[in-house]
Image (tube, rainbow, N blue to C red; front, side, top):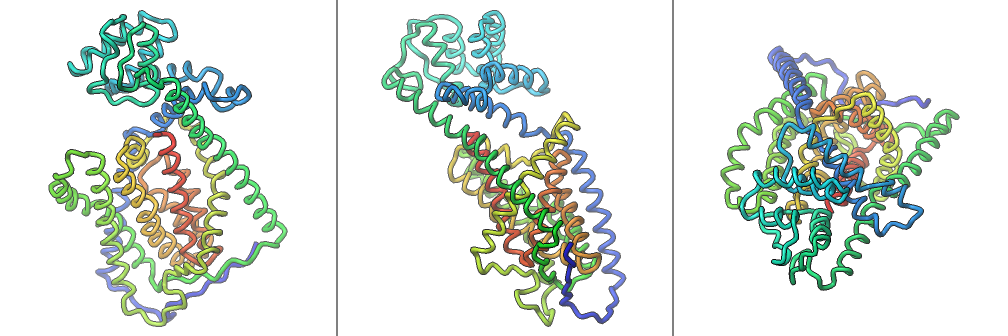
Length: 479
């Protein structure tokens, strides 16, 4: 292994830390520990987006099945995707403590009807009648028995493309005349269905084939790097340059600024302000929520960054590239390093996530932003979500964990320990026990890139690319 060279830019003369500052750091550390412990325990009670993702994947397989070439049917769509979807719906509805969304129950009833269990389908339809509004009931009634009134308008219903197709197929089976407008309109019905199946096929390929290709490439790059290090032919690690802060400063920044001020106090102060000021967007809840999320994240960032600015203000002997070593240029090499590291980390994160799922059957505590992206159709809301996830979060989190925490720890305990500890803090900070192992591995990859390149810019780009891949997957599933 290559020796790690450290460059300490801060003066080496000893300096005493005021007692009040040490006491404040200790208090911040205790409070942040309690807050994080409570957040991790609470994450066990939060719903996981994994169930919604599994349903969307199965729905996509059912939609794409008619367009799948015969050799790919079992590989991409499964042997019987409609049966798998029905069983998954039954399982999730039975296991859920909260009432299932009416559209989901309607989908299950239509799948059960298609499977030939008319008695159970009627039971589901009858149960729906008591849960939906009067304007929604005509559709349910028309799906149970033939009607000569024509296909009903889908008033009050927000249905996915698969649910709309199931409704139209059921109405055609009953011989109900197709309406002139709407999703079941007779005009160009064949072309619409063919386009729907083709679109689903492309999305399914993007969700299934692309990750396999990325995993294959990433595994190759990872094995090549390990082989080079084993043969002592890997390039030396870059010089680790960091801000002239000590552990008390870092504790005040992360525990006091980020956790206590950012995660605890900022929502208490900012949430009512945002709620009152965004009332004009109540007609568009998705956009209102997206603006609120963006505003909340900007507020969360402000105090820690202000603390960091005050800690570095007036420091002399700033090294070339600055205290945080952004060093974006040359941008092409930063992008190349970020992309390669994403590919190399992907198989490790996938493996750790899979192992954790095998050991812990009930995943929980997903990031709420995932569910928001999955269920939002407003393009402006999606744009704001993408800015939060792919720009603000990488910039802020990399500044904190790889720009400050890692080099300060590295200068004291060694670069590798700096990578490990900063990755652990990074994983815990997301307050999700279900996602902690995968986030820890991702943090290791981000920290190793910072250590290897000597630059913070590639880590920010890698973080943004990683979040962008997650965002793209959600958009493909949502359609």
